[in-house]
Length: 99
Length: 175
Image 1 (tube, rainbow over the protein chains, first blue to last red):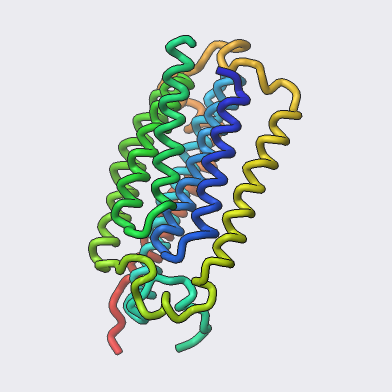
Image 2 (cartoon, rainbow over the protein chains, first blue to last red):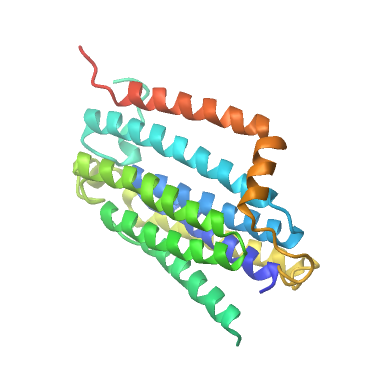
């Protein structure tokens, strides 16, 4: 398989994730779409690492996964806090700075 | 078509269809489960790229830990299906028009990416053509703990901060 195949697939997944952020009106699905985008980038990293014959691409992938885990933990804690206030997960419900 | 190509397109199909299912529906529980399916497809692609350790970590950490966290929050909050709470019905942005613009933007991005990649030289070189793969976990560990030592230590602080932050944010206020 050529590097182009993997990069097109990576771009496709990234666009699906971006479309999710644009289209969905639910904070949890938004976070899931961000995870899709992070994974698309991971795939590109590993493909380039394979082509260069080094392990650096795989190592960057671990760092991306760690950041994704941290982001998910903090993001979901925020979601819980916001849901307690409004009983809704629609991001449009949280447009005021203070309540 | 060789077995390599068959596997690539199979796993690619699973991951793309899984991702489309994630964004294509309103019940968050199904979204989380579809994303796990998509991660299994990606994990297969990592095996094809001779990165078995990343593939295993993808399953254990992503599908096993992060997605369980999502699932736990979805069930804890008893999340309403999208479009059913009062906020969703009242807001002007929930009309179809702004959503169509978002869809157009993402289709535009796919087109641009594919166009740019198709004009970049060297895209038809096979990933495994030029150099032998490096899939040894020992080498991975050696590079991680020598060349990337600083980044590794910073990551541990990041996780600590994220943990403290998550506990503080999700804690019930006294007042």
